[in-house]
Length: 245
Image (cartoon, rainbow, N blue to C red; front, side):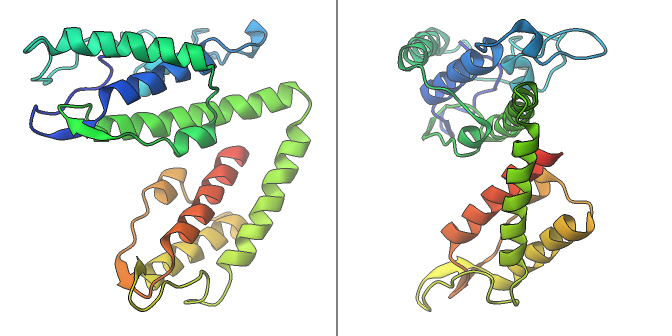
């Protein structure tokens, strides 16, 4: 069973343990055991150690033990739940190995888990997803460079950036399709404010982090921008930022 993440209280909603375990199993197979030459494994240049999925997810250094019990996990070891979750973890890993699904940075960004009582802490899991997305994106770019495809990789990122800038440079209030007057969308002024920052990032090299884009929050507004369209564009923005950094 994974003890990377603490579990919430028995009566509190957290992420479905089985789904998180299945995701971690697939991530370990894709990242820790890639089907490539050993030289392609991401290695810390200072220590010569390999960072694993568990270490990335836990936010620990390679020398730390990411599977060490998490302090403050009041639900651990009670009512036989450890044994139950251990069975769930084993089944999740077996299922991941059976399906052979391969994770990518983009796939990690779109990963979602159902909620159930006593599950894993959403805050901790969400943070792990962001770190893993970064790690997978770096690995994918490294593999592209090893295969002699870095120039094509960068050209694709630049082409996508041009399309994004064209969209984000539209007149305020008209950058995205609006929801109907009876439907709720993202508040246009909030989205436009972020759009202005993104244009300056792409055109002028203004400082902006991936986390600022990931964690952007927009107030609701009737007749605001359609949420799905804004989210899709911001997904593409994150793709480009990870590709070029």
